[in-house]
Image (cartoon, rainbow, N blue to C red):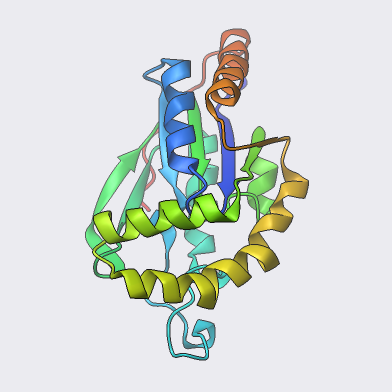
Length: 218
């Protein structure tokens, strides 16, 4: 029987509400067979020196900041009906921890991240591609509150990073991903999440049940 594991990519700038939108979609699906995969988990353990800014800081908003080989492998495993051992990244220490989280096996994977639509090999695995297009002022404000409250950053460091890397990288690398999206979502995500979850449920109801396989060792 043909396997039907659906991968949904959700891209957008930092602070655009990707995780919140993905959770709304999962709630609308209302299925135990769905999982959420965060691209942030795949930051490299050590950032390459060639990726540092002129001020001597790592550029976490550049495509080279991520472990693409591991990410491609894990998404391929999930697409094949297997589970993965997803790395756990600490934003407080800016490094991976020794822990991991098991994701899958499942029927639907919502994959959210700033570059979830950037890589062609990954785009080819995705069944639905979304882009959250949110005003820069709103994204900046959300990022400011999140990083200070949840990630222990100072107000000054968040502002400096925004102008040093976040804003220019969005313009150069992130916003162009909109051309690959099946649809673009604005600030109001409630209706969009209901539409997307309804479409996913239609796909699930019409598809043969997937074959669940053994977990990947990576």
